Image (cartoon, rainbow, N blue to C red; front, side, top):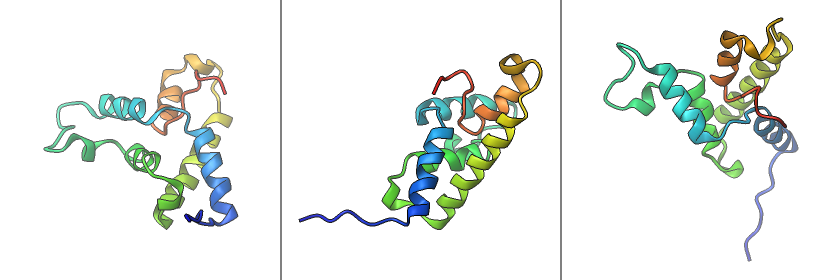
Length: 116
């Protein structure tokens, strides 16, 4: 008989909030970060390691199961939630047409054009 691992209720809430705020699928986020990271000196021998931060760390968390989270992963999740919510609250007058603002959110795995 397999038992479900009991997680801290706070981790459950953070997990749910993180996946609500980070609404871009992991492969789409990876492609976006590769695009953002491209440039003259962007890629070393392993492009995945050269992805822009904090997107690379967010992408790593997206590939994990809840029971495999480390304390560092939980901090990444908290940080992503806070940053996405702060940026979303500061929506510019041009709204979704403001590419700099939208791209800042995409760097964190949040696309304002995806409806919840």
